[in-house]
Picture 1 (cartoon, rainbow, N blue to C red):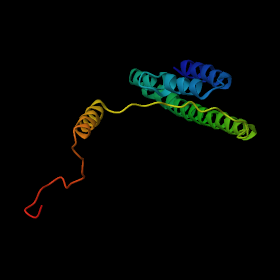
Picture 2 (spheres, rainbow, N blue to C red):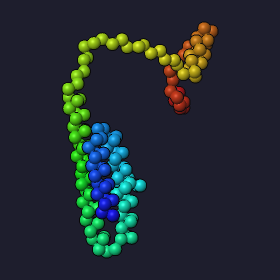
Picture 3 (tube, rainbow, N blue to C red):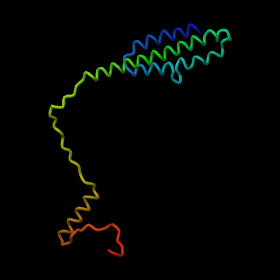
Length: 139
């Protein structure tokens, strides 16, 4: 069991160093600590060990787990900082002219019918007025 833990430790330390993007770091994190991650499944095998072996393996497991978590967190932080430094060096040139495309919209079909109907009634002599939407005794 100790060999398996140390093998996982060495393997994932190497993977963490090689990962250059946040996505790769997330994949490594899930491979270790996800629902079916190696460090999530490993403690389920501790029940098969004797109590002496558990006393040896448990502290080693906890140490490796904490170290890998910290290493992933530190590497993620470094990658984020590098991204922020790249953003600082970028500049935005607002002096260049850009042709904006004219967008032509259309009226809703019911609005078009309403306007056409009002136009027909205007031609035969009717007028259109604004009025309250609710009639009262006063009106």
